[in-house]
Image (tube, rainbow, N blue to C red; front, side, top):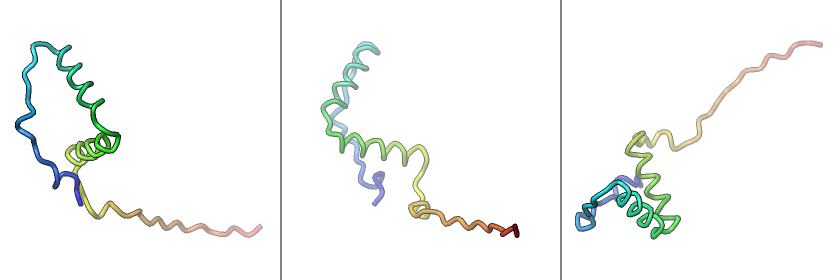
Length: 72
């Protein structure tokens, strides 16, 4: 399942801060309150948003290389 399909915005969790420094501190406090699993899920969501999701790329690519035998 794609992470982007399970994502929902909690509209009750917005706040307005008076400076960028306050926003940075609030961001740090928010991410420190999350578990490593939740952080990885957020990272995967951002990856899918930025780079897209293609189920055909989930598999490993098969690479075929032909090597010629040189007589010694």
